[in-house]
Image 1: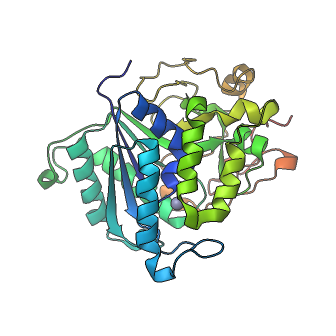
Image 2: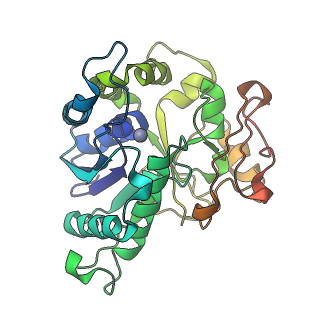
Length: 322
Ligand SMILES: [Zn+2]
């Protein structure tokens, strides 16, 4: 039982929190964990809805309000916006934003820190950029010599990238997300009891109506069987510093090598966790700079991950459809 846990997510846009980790945020809030969301932009360059519900110049404030409503639904304890513009995150002063993030980590002292992976999940340049900045901040926050003006050093106990394993992407036919190898899942969080909250939070982002339709498909409560049923009630996290195969079902838990804390994916875990070819590492951790984010994904042909590392430019060793 977690009594005084603190969890922080550092993401790029209003809606990232609900779409990617809404179930996890709701679950930990319900357990009494203090949840903090850092949102780097107000999403002012996004869509205004279909049909539009505001003018483009109003979009930033409308999306801020949408996020605050979603945060209430997910019981997020604290939301802080950074003063950056949507679609411009990649060009901001890196030292400045990392200093800000180091300061926030040190002030709120999360034991668990979540951000996007180097692929940005969808390759969105803002997602890729915030991943880079948050990763740097997570590494520097514990260093007493780094940004001493930003407060006392703090080391988040666990650091995760949100992401989707290959079998999940295959099950739902998600075409716009970068698959990661199932063998790399570090934490599979059961969020079934919180799917209603997640769906309600997603619906708060009314300006993003197109995405809402897609995401409601992934959380459809009427799914009763099959691969989709086996995957729907989970959210997945990847710890770049944890050993492959050490999977837990609680983000606050420290992994043991070869631990089997999570029973995801039910029935397939024994084969996928330990038989996938470890030489096919979809995301080598130190490869941020060379991430072209070329995603090749074909549900009908199984799941193929492609990106900048030549050694990874080959089909995964297994697919969920085989
Ligand atoms: Zn986003």
